[in-house]
Amino acid sequence: LKSFGVQIKGEPMIVSGRVLPPPRLEYGKGNGGRQIILTPKDGAWNSNEFKFFESACCESFGFVSFLPPHKASMLQEFCLQIVRTCRSTGIQMPDSPKFYEQAGKNDSVEMVLKRIADKCDRDGIKCDLVFVVLFSSDQYAEVKSCGDITFGLVTQCLLPRTINEVAVKKSYSTMLNIAMKINMKIGGINTKLLKDEM
Image (cartoon, one colour):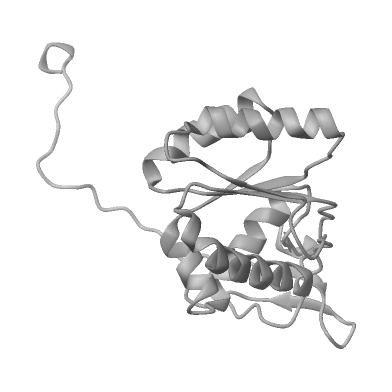
């Protein structure tokens, strides 16, 4: 840098700035049938009794587990809770998965997802979403590469601790976070800025 005549000061530059007010967010209609408008406070807002701005429709979904088979009952409880939460936000969703695939001990991510893609093609199943319960976070990149890119499956990855938060602890914030991801992935709009905020 010196050869170009550039010098760097030892201390950071002081500049003036301002804090912008949080934008007001528009959601769908609440339980009383009126449009819900919220203003976040300290980066958070209570999102209990309303629906997404535009809730998507999930006609069918599938489930893949890389966890040991004895975790199946916990996954059933997860499924029950997440469907209930999605419906409460306006997402149309069936009661249960169209298929459940238990990965074998020696199955690779690619093998399992290929089986699912082949099954959907063979049986004419239109699968809007596939929940993939990972054994570890190391599998995430491969699921996204094989599932979303190679085989065209829309996937929602879940770690064991997330399953536990929903199925055992019944954490509403975790369930709502998953529902928000699902809604966006299958074509919904969670919220939008009020027109007068732009």
